[in-house]
Length: 396
Ligand SMILES: *Cc1c(COP(=O)(O)O)cnc(C)c1O
Image (cartoon, rainbow, N blue to C red; front, side, top):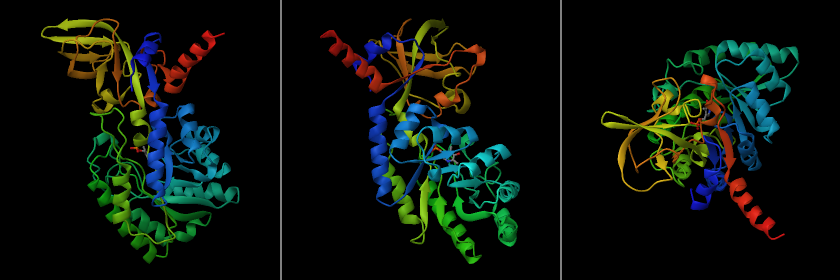
């Protein structure tokens, strides 16, 4: 990912900045699409993972749909080439205004998370005399075996409808006359690396589908959410195992030939295509430990502070020696660390560090705390192309 040519380019740029490898992203998208096409699966990119316009345009060019969790995400997806008939909208707290936008823009489907929300959508649809397609987001009570903050499918999470809610909907179907209720949606969490979790999900989905069909609710589309994890310890050029992932569903899901299957990958699409590049400001000796202070903080990449997430970190300016370091940002918060007890070559002021796997849930989670300036954003095709341009202009 980081040739000498690229490191020379990096040296001239103001740090910290996000670097996106568009070649890798294209390769990843091609493989993902190829694997999904084998089974006729439909894909909606989870915009919340990375909503950078340029990234959205690359992804929408491949014909992906979008999975949005706010009205602004719906708007931004539309502005960046996603077709309304391929947009789905989830979230526990959609405002009336956001729901109205979804109705006006004629998006594919609203993934509905509570009985009250169903009623609100129904009444908004009634006012404008429309039928609105909804999917019931069902909480399957499955442990995603991931960090507690990114588990969404357990009974006491705030997400989705319980099975009791589903019973209520079945008994009161006529209340929802402006809804086309022909989908189910299940998303159980993120950064799931144990595929057995998805096998368990299939079991629950099979039961739910059977139950709904017995109760005369005809399901046309089944949306299985996102959640496929990436390898944060070995990030370079790593394509997630999309084949194994889709195979689990192909083998364990019992569906009718007319039922469409949808997925909403986010992290697995963009996670490994981005890195945060930061410069070393100071190296402090705290007793036996050395602490590297870098110019990026959790305002630029929140995952380590929020989820105790571990990202691989590499010094791309130095190769000699090896030492244990803690790596901290400049913010006035004790949680502002990117790693502790990491083995790095001998590091000095001015060195560049790469924090890998920062493409997903990186740039989108940035804040201005301490009145920080947003990190820059650079794309491989610009940086490497601009160098080629320079060579051709030299000829004149
Ligand atoms: C966050 C989210 C996703 C994407 O999850 P990843 O782990 O990034 O694949 C998909 N669907 C819904 C409803 C989500 O909230």
